[in-house]
Length: 179
Image (tube, rainbow, N blue to C red):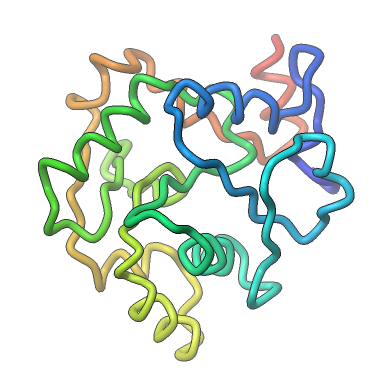
C-alpha cells in the first residue's frame, strides 16, 4: 500500500478500528504491536514495539508472546477489516478442547492463515530458535508446532463467506472491497 495500512480509511474509519471492533466483544486484553506508538496512540490500547525490528509478522508474534500475561494470544493482522467475532471466539474455544495444540490455525483452500490464529505462549522458545536461525516465515514456525488445523467446513457456520480472511495488501484490494 505504500503507507501504514492500519490507518487507511474504510467506511469512514481507520482499518485498525474495524479490527478492534471485532475483538472488543471477546473481552480479551488487546495488545497492539507497533513501532509507531505516536501514530497509534489515539486507539488508546496498550502497545509494545518489536523486540527484533524488521522481522515482519514473526517479530510481531515474538513481541506479543513475550509481553502477554495470558497462556495464549490471538494474533490478527491490522489489514483484515472483516474479522468475524464469532469465528474468533470459536478459535479461542478450541484452545480449551485441544490443550496440547501449540497453535489453532485456519486453512483456506489448504493454505495456512497464520495471521488469524491462536498461539500458546509456550511456543516462545521455538519461535526464538526460528529467529536465531533466520527462518522468518510464520509457516516455517508452524512446521515445528503441534497445530490444530481449522478447515473451511468448520469455519463456515461462523463466517459463511469466510470474509474474515479478506486481506488488504494493495490499492486494488481496497477498491474491490469498497465497490
